[in-house]
Length: 385
Image (cartoon, rainbow, N blue to C red):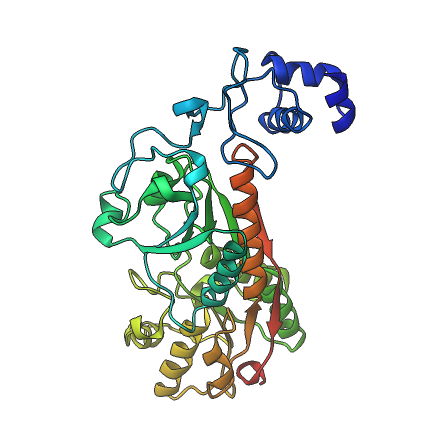
């Protein structure tokens, strides 16, 4: 015990609690100590590994009958641990040993189109997973499967090492996925702040600084009115962008944002594709008593649609109104006027997403994390008064 304590810089008493499974100790610390014990060759433990680690064996034939560490999972054949052996709704029940899990599953309600920021993110993730021997499988969950909380029919959990969600913002469905027991990453997440936090890591782009910087500049130019367009409850990133607009406006002396905003659009549509928008936004803009000097939109596709709708109303951008999008989709650069936006570093998103999943595979007991990848404000023609 003293050798292990010295190797980790911990007290002997802490190591004793972990090895003897006594006293109060953080689960992450217990896991760290037991892994170090196995690395140093100590075998007098019943130590269940979730997933095989380089240089470590999950063979328990020589393990003594010491009390096993309670990790909240069921022991499978030969003492191996089966993540999520409880009942699973839909798909295949998870009954294979950890060593056979070579697939990382992406679950989505909408396959991203070529303009969506996540296409590059997924490509980067696939490169990293492939280099480590994992395959990437993409599963589209249908509306009926979401409503019945069932996994996609072709998804076999016995092959799955981890799951990540993209464009999947139904809270109950995400909670079902988190109950399976496999490592789970949400790339963006449901805007369900009044519900129990999900047992998952969350990856987001940074949604505040670009909007704050933009409105600070606009206030210095004498602008006083700004509105936000986007369904703030569609997902967490939309909520944060709307919150950033409202907060920054208050900080920099703008009039209240809500009277100039459309906060429930698009209802029930997919904000990832221009094709899913209709002329509803023209009607909603026409019903506004006053058009503000600036619109900040939840993404670029909304912003492009808003500019087109305003043009049909005889309101020109940037002559009569300034418009800022978010995402820096390819269309934003070629649109007339070229769209000011907030750039997402999609390659960095992919790298960080892969790191989060791989670290969760190696240690499914660590604390859940919410991670932000920096973004950059890009000013183009649509905000040049």
